[in-house]
Image (cartoon, rainbow, N blue to C red):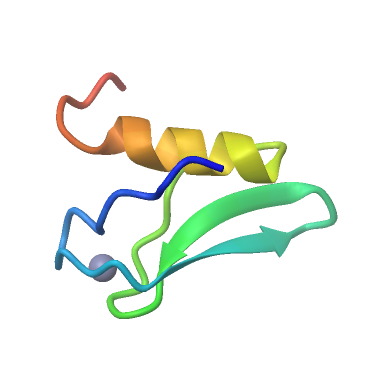
Length: 58
Ligand SMILES: [Zn+2]
């Protein structure tokens, strides 16, 4: 399992993956509540979270 990068907003590493709406996942920062992109799987949610940091490709 890939290691999650720290939250880009407060550098917090206390993160969790939330499972919601049946089959959607996203990473959430437990401190500031920042949420990563929604994904179909746990692993994808972690990947999207890590990809988001740094250059913004959206
Ligand atoms: Zn945060």
